[in-house]
Length: 238
Image (cartoon, rainbow, N blue to C red; front, side, top):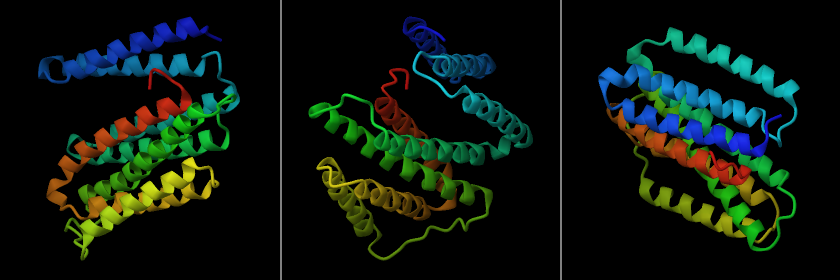
């Protein structure tokens, strides 16, 4: 097991590598090296997290890492460069699903010794993280379907769609207020269902030709979902 100081140092090194990776991707000559910076940074982040001082259950974690790595390698090798937008959209859906599961799990088993304002802040983090994650998950699935041709690329324009979107957001805000007043877990679960439908409707209303832009938007959403997850888990790195 690694000490908290070593884990912090690993996270800092991984963060620097991610910054170098993003910077290098803007230059075609440095792109290959930048990808390796990202790979090493992610490997360090996973290593620091798995072997951190508060982690247990290696009998489950290690096999999942191995299985996920094998699946990721096989999928990446089979996808042509022209299929990268679809692959990116699919991967965004996994980020969203992970954010939903982590947020709900953090609600079911919250960190100990949270009271008053700290508990309210934690609940806000959970609610926002699950909402963004759910929207990202279904939105990414629809984007993947439109890019791959399995879903009709035509925009689905429902009557009063903007009012429907506004109503869904306001309904989720109301559910959030109920959730913060600790009336039970049902507002969180109901909001998750509404957010899943909301995410699908958002992307269905956009034509297939604009899907690359949508994928970029979902990339931002997945980043916010990961950040909210980091707050829930009290992980500075995320």
